[in-house]
Length: 117
Length: 107
Image (cartoon, rainbow over all chains, first blue to last red; front, side):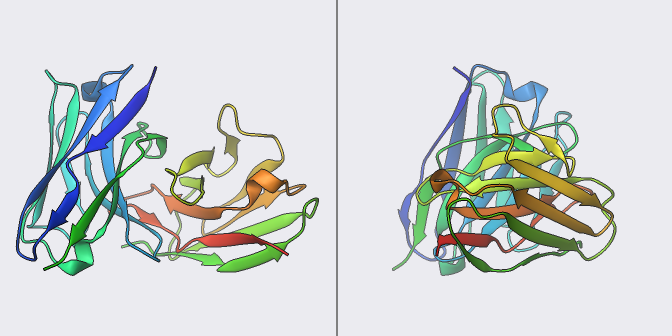
C-alpha cells in the first residue's frame, strides 16, 4: 500500500529541538519531491519546507535557519530537524508526496508537535 | 511571495445545494493551482490539480475552473460527506502558499 507515516512529534520546551520522520511505503522517496506542511490549532494549512528530487531545499521564511529538511534514501524516509522551537511552531505536521509540477497527491496522517514549558 | 485569498471563510449550505468557493492569487499563477479537502482530525485530500483536473477517485460533483489570478471550486450538489474545510494552494513558485481555508457547514 502506498502511504506515508509521520513520527517524532511530542512535547518540547521553548528553545528545544525535535526531529520528525516520515516513512514512505509503496514508492521511493528519492524519485519524488517531498514536502512538510503544518496546521496550527485553529488555523489553516501552512507550507513549511520542501526537498526536490535533486536535493534542492526550500523553506518558509518562518522556519528558515531553524528547520532542516533531509531524506535518507536507504531508509526511504523524509526528515524535518526542528531547532530553536517556539510556541508558534505548535502544530500538526504533515509530510506530503509532491508531484513534479508541485501539488501534493499523498499525505501522511500527521504528528503533533507541542512547544510549551 | 504569492499570497492566496479564499472567500468566503465560512459557508453554510444544505444537502443538494450548489456551492462555489473562490480563490484569488496576488499575481498570475497560470493554472498552477490545487484544491484540497480536510476533515477534522484527518489529513488533507487532493481534489483538483492544475486548476481543473479532477484527481482520480474524486467524485465528479467537484469541479475547478479559472486561470491567472482567479479560481473557483464548485460542488454541484452538496453531499453529507462534503462538510469539511477546503483549501486552495499555488505551486507556481516558492514559497508555496495555501489560502486561509473555507469551512463548509451544515445550514
